[in-house]
Length: 286
Image (tube, rainbow, N blue to C red; front, side, top):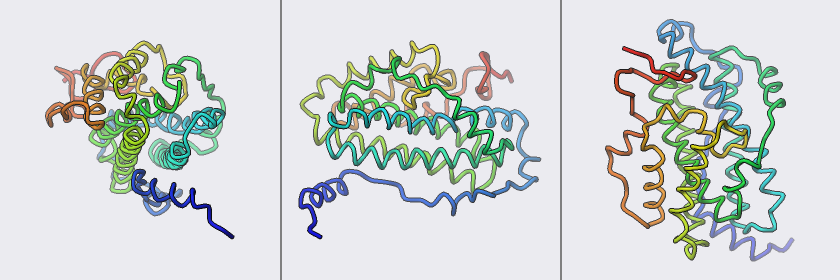
């Protein structure tokens, strides 16, 4: 069979620009994995409760990648071949995250896989409220950078507050989540740098509009993008502005934020508090 020369060249270009973190979920966290009872004995009760609440959201928002992907594919004729190849790798990772978090949720909270299936089947995915971020390939890539780098720092905070308490396997899942989301951020940047530099004058204003949309949403609309609206109070007020500077820096448009600013994105704790509870309006007082 003759090999399509265009496909060969496309594959070679993508290997240079698009990276994927390769890891085996079954090797890290087998489906029948059980956490040692002595670990549960050592974990503070509020850490356990808050982690269960966090997982009850994160499991499903990772699974929301599938309906977002399905929507984008209805417009595949508008998208470049490289974007579609990258998107396929992105979906593969996000669905692995869905399975990884299902296993994590099951072995920590005891929720059955059948119950998770039922809850996910009941979700309603509303595209209309986030139409702004789905305008075209350029907008999708900028939004992906914003969303994925937000996830990098969100998962870093989750590692610090929760994953590290539940043993090496659970902690390793958290590390892979951070690494995968960082690669998605970088992959989107590479495609923007390769195909869309002529629109870089629009990037900062678009990022400000995306940030404004996220802050204005009354809820998460179960469409993967802008899912951080669920937990904005866990992060410092400057969270989005630092993310925007980080994105612009990755595209070569401004200077990188300093180390202290970046650390604040995941190490921030409100004054007078020791952690931010997942489902509470207030803070946990010392």
